Length: 149
Image (cartoon, helix red, strand yellow):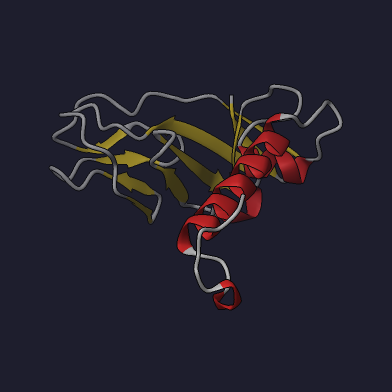
């Protein structure tokens, strides 16, 4: 690409910089999409896909506090660790009126809309107005990685 700048010593113009940044981003995206069967776990965590097609990477086991959990809004799930080394996953959608749950603390998953509370162990209702528990979600835990199945 050539620049139409009348000041050659002034450096690249805005159009050249934007084009270069776009080309670099495209190259990075194509490289990620073209990863073969030898893709590492680090690459899989970055791209969000397991090298063996085993689901979307969510977190490391160390990211999920014991007795608590973490909400993954983009994936619509909440992952909990009710006791050391045991991981559970549930839909992040409250069955009462479809609000997204907002926090996980003290062994409870809490919906901020109307105050429903659910168990981190099994998603059951601990406090209404919800009358149904959170729907279970499938995850896989391998080593220190947690993936949405």
